[in-house]
Image (cartoon, rainbow over all chains, first blue to last red; front, side, top):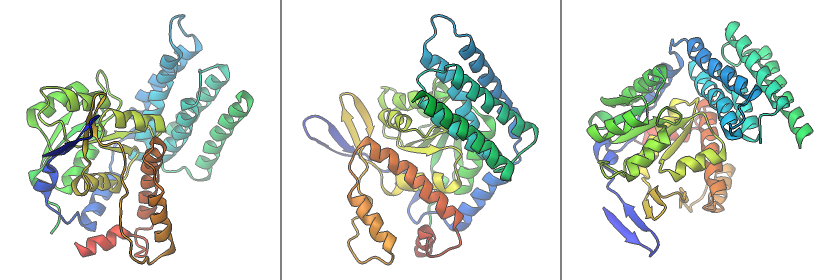
Length: 166
Length: 212
C-alpha cells in the first residue's frame, strides 16, 4: 500500500485485491445477456411485496393526517417517503415498471416538500389509490396508454401543487 | 482472457428476500462462487468481519441498521478486517442529497434501483479497473470523493459526440453537483446502450469485448 500526505489528509492507494483475484479482460456479452435474462425473466410475484409497502404508506398517511403533537415533520415525511422509495426500487425489478415510474415522480415531489400539508396528503392519497388500481388490475410493464395517463395525472397533480405553493 | 470471479467473494446485504435471490443469481452468473448474505447492517457487519469478502453489495434502507451506517462501520471500526473494501450501494433514492450522504459515509459506487445487469457490471468493472484512492481526513475516511477525468485520450475522434464527450469531461469540476450529475448521466447512458444493444456504432463495450 502506498500513502502520501498533504498536511491535512492522508491519501492511500490500497492494494487492488479484487483485481488480483479476478484478473483482466472483463466479462463477455453472453454472460451479461444471460444475467440480464435472469433478471428480466424472474417469476417473483411483486404484489405481496408491494402490499407490505402499501400498508406502511397507509400508516404513514394516517400519521400525517393526525400527527401527534411532538412529532417532527421530517419523521412524517420519512414515513411517506420510505415506502414509496421501496415501491419504486422493487416495482421495476419485478415487472411493474409503471409503479417505479409513478413512484419516482412522487419521490421527487416529497423530497422537495417542506411539510406534508393537506394538499400534499391528497396527492399522496391519489398516488396510493393509483398504485392500488395498478396492482389490482395486474397492470405490468409500462401499462401502455392507460399507464401513461395514470403517470400524467400524478405529474399534473404535483405540478398543480407546486404552482399553488410556490 | 476474461474476469474469473471464482476466487473472489461477495457479501450481499439486503432485507428483501426476492431481491437477495435476484442479486445472488446475477453475481453467480458473473462467476462468484463464494456469496454471503446478511439481512441488515448489523448482520452485514458481523458477516463482513467473519468472512472478509472482496466486495460488498448493500441495500440502503434496512432496520435496525441501514446500509450506509454499516458502510461507515466497515470504514471506521477497529475490528473491521478491511477498511478499504469496495462497497456498492443499491437504493431507490436518486436525489442529489442522498448520493452525497452515501458518498460521505464511504460508499464506493452507487446504483439506483430498479437497475439492469450492465449497471451492476459497470460498477464492478470500475472497481476492478479504476480503483479509487482512499482519503483519511479527520472528518472522513473512504474512497476519494472527487471524480477524476476518465480519459486522457488526445487523438482524433471518429464521431462528433466523442468530441463533445471529451470537452464535457474536461469541463468537469470536482464538485458535488457534478458528482451527482455524473452518476445519473452514466446510468442514463447505460440504459440507452442497453436499448440500442445491437447497433455496433453505439455500443462501445461490445467493441471492447471483441478486443478482450
